[in-house]
Image (cartoon, rainbow, N blue to C red; front, side, top):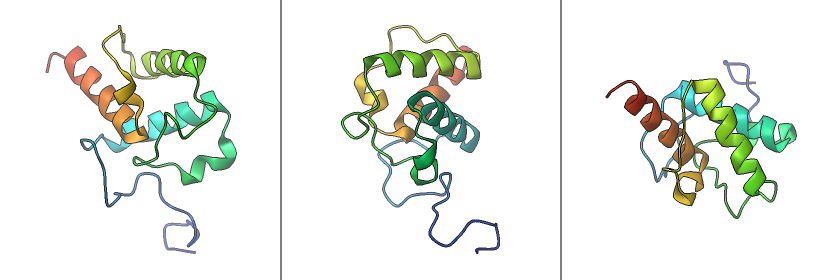
Length: 112
């Protein structure tokens, strides 16, 4: 075991990754988005493998159009946001990309 309690084979989903095609979402946002995805898609058995670079569309068969609606609704509830039609498939390219989208929406809602 590593000192933080994680086994050597497990990845920390919040640990930085070598290649990220997105901004740096806050750890709280990233963790929240991962939690929402895991619960919505029912993939608790794969939760420890998810991180910011995990691809979504085309890589997770559970992620269909209904799941997207459920994820957006859960994001709105968890983060106190209203997401209108200003999101695109690009926002769902990776988990990190979706977390970036959430941070951007939070910033805009706060007037920043």
